[in-house]
Each structure stands twice: as structure tokens, then as C-alpha cells.
Image (cartoon, rainbow, N blue to C red; front, side, top):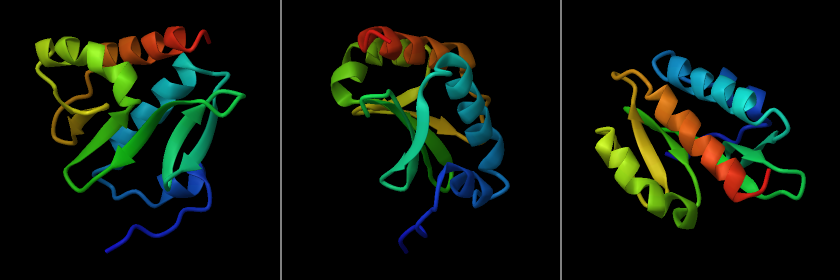
Length: 121
């Protein structure tokens, strides 16, 4: 069943299931702290943090049993060994974050800061 269309990022977060909310709210807070100059917009019905030129930095995604922090595959590929060494699951461009495990905040912040440097922001 398709996800209902969200109006904006606040609407997205308001519609989260109770078990999804802690991780995604923490990711939102981390995103705002690491990239206070980035705009929070919806792209593909998901919160996405973008620069003034609309370059996407990263996206938050929610699923039934996990959420994901998604980057471009080109940016993320060289970081996969770092993610694997931390014991985290990943795929092409994303790190999988199960709701029943604590967020690897230091790792996520490091990835976000590297993405900002990658974009010269």
C-alpha cells in the first residue's frame, strides 16, 4: 500500500508510528545540528536536507522495522568499509538503522560532516 502523501516535513514526522518516532526524531535533530544551514524539504515523500542550490545532502527514510539514512551512492561507496567496521548494515547509498538498536550517532554524524565537506558546505 503506498505511503500517504505528506504535506511537509512536519506532517511527515507527525504521521510516524510510535515505534518509528524516536529514531527519526533523533535523526532530524542530528541533521539540524550538523547542517543548520540546510533546508528540510520533502523529496520522494521523505525528509531531505538540501543546500541552497537544491543539492541533496541526505534523506531520512522510514520502514516497518528500520529507518535509513540515505546518501548518493557515489558519496557513500567509499564509506561502506567504515560502516561495516562499525557493525552496521548498509546498501547502495544507505545505512540501515533498526528501531530495536541504538542509533550509531557518532558514525552518522561523521558521515553527515563528510557529506558537507564533499559538497564544500
